[in-house]
Image (tube, rainbow, N blue to C red; front, side):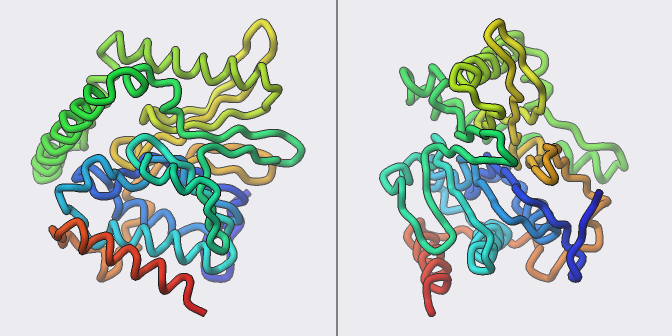
Length: 289
């Protein structure tokens, strides 16, 4: 049953968000901010690739991207426990594993107790063979993916003008290429097998941009596999409340009235150092008494 606060925000015990890729053209930060402002979570897990440090050199940082950071800080300031799980695109933060600042903590993986059941949460790049053995190839693929997202944005702009529904070119490519489907299946199976071996009830990942909730059964047991998707294509998040997992899928009409004056299309191109300084300024405000 939907529970709301006096402010109209929906109560959620746990929210898992991953693969936001702040600092890239494909990031749907504006939509994410609207979603974040619509809920009041007790615990938030940011499951990797929140800031895309790989492509940060472009100095692309729209207002909505900073709004995501501000909302994360606002959650932590107001008592929400926030875990930042590192991913491959923000791997620079792995050197700060264990760092704690108020309600915000940086980890590589997380084990949570949810109503007596164990949830194993990690980004998932550890199972990506290309990440382990051909890092340059993965980064090259990331650039190509970003270009595909740019082309997709132009196509959708045209389709909207024509009154036609949006499409996802990258999703179509994934669904049509056998190797991609096979990779997703292997990824899910690998996560499930290790989770079962460790007697975990839930295994929660990101990384592959493929939102999912399903039970996986093997000879030695079963586990619920969950993937939070992303905020580039899927626009999804995982929610846990009253003992149940649900997959949130952003729909434009649900948030049509939520636009604020900061939610404009202004794009900020700045030096990398300037963006980092702005981020530090936000963090300093969080730590100030």
